[in-house]
Amino acid sequence: MDRKTFLYRASCAACLAGMGGIGTWLSSCGTGIKPFVEIDKKVRNVEIPFSAWDNNPVVVIARKGANNIAVTRKNNVYKAVALRCTHQGAGLKVKGEEFTCPLHGSKFSWEGKVLTGPAKEPLTTYDFQTGEGKIILQIREIT
Image 1 (cartoon, rainbow, N blue to C red):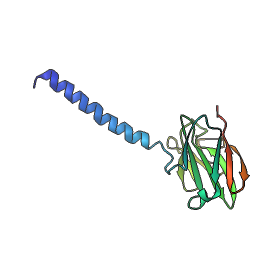
Image 2 (image 1 turned 90 degrees about the horizontal axis):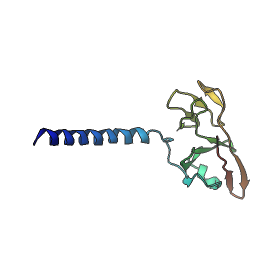
Image 3 (image 1 turned 90 degrees about the vertical axis):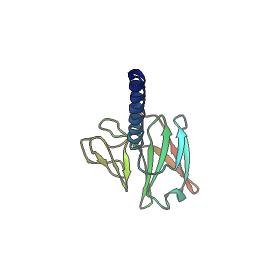
Image 4 (image 1 turned 135 degrees about the horizontal axis):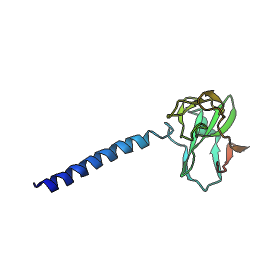
């Protein structure tokens, strides 16, 4: 094998190895739990049956190309919050009934209140209506 072929193959192998690392890094940006549903960012209303909270206090709505949303339930009180840190906009991880920023460690309560900084502002909330056996989440864009 000549030098040119060796260098070409070695650089291709290095790129592929690096892409594997990027894939691992990107997958770590997820919320940490399986989403209830994945929707396009253009969808404005999502119906969630109350039974979705039977096994978990948090239901995640994954939005392609937009911020994910967590709808939480505690003592039959529901809250819907953006899974986007108010410090620098990073996606949040779900850990039990708390949301944690993987960049700087800000923590938020299930209601979206700041527990520890550096974030100072609470999470953005979403409106919803309760219907017969379900919640209807009303989604708007966050700027």
